[in-house]
Image 1 (spheres, rainbow, N blue to C red):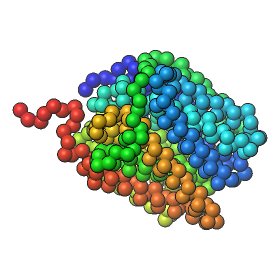
Image 2 (cartoon, rainbow, N blue to C red):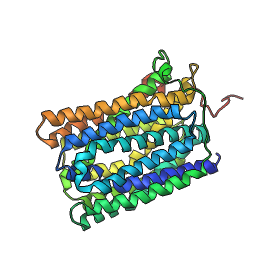
Image 3 (cartoon, rainbow, N blue to C red):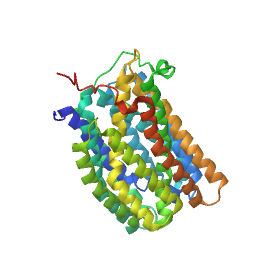
Image 4 (cartoon, helix red, strand yellow):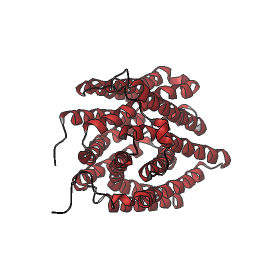
Length: 408
């Protein structure tokens, strides 16, 4: 098995630096927004909906800009826009609630350009046989960064009065974004005059890999949008202390380091199906337990379990997406499918947040809302497995791309 190339390592470092910045601010961002808006959960959800819509526009727009602007320039513009989002939060402070929705545009624009560029760079500079290894090390590095930062973040937040601790963390995150921008200069750029066939791919019928890919991404995105929106708010409702939450998140990340290191060496296309079946089943059961018993011991147990196995899913999911895109064919290229997938991705995110918004509107108790949303998340976990099994049988009937023949 070959080592990651120099450019692959540079791309990995950029990802690590972005992860570091996002872990510092991202662990408690929804709690911060809850405090800054005097508990207006609906406003936070609407802001995130704007983020996802803008992300989709930027992602699709990146395919148009690539004819004139280098892919690495788009990557840097994405990082710069995300940095600007947190800079404006620092500048606005007490006036944040008034400008929360417009600010979402900078966050969405940055995320869209960053992920558009990153997906195309992964497809270009990393061999398919090495993508599993790349995603595995990406998860490991993210876990290492996640060990210290949540605990430190929680300590800083509780050490200072009002929202001062949050503003300090945003400033530190900006340093990591800046370093990521500088590191991206080590990656070779490229432009493409070829028009990415987004709309033709969206109209494509009868292609089982594309059908699996778009349904898979819809369900994943719906699940992740809901979880990203409510899980930390749920934890804050239980603990009422960012310092305690930070310590637990750091402990879970420590577990993830060893789990993801082992998984990066163990994972292969041959064993991805049983690994994901185990992961999806356990995650489903944990979310159902949280829905039934929303208490401290269950939440701590869930965090431990997440620390052990969530990195497995985070490695397998993107790998499966790239496998589906590379096998879909039908007269189109892998990049066509990767960009077109942003449509079901955005739809899933919007539907997930819309469901959360409706439940908050009609149910008085936030705790009961969270419990219902956890049931939806649990269902999505096992549904993801079923989609790939039904559509492509987890690629069992296909020769792995890295093998030429299995006979002598």
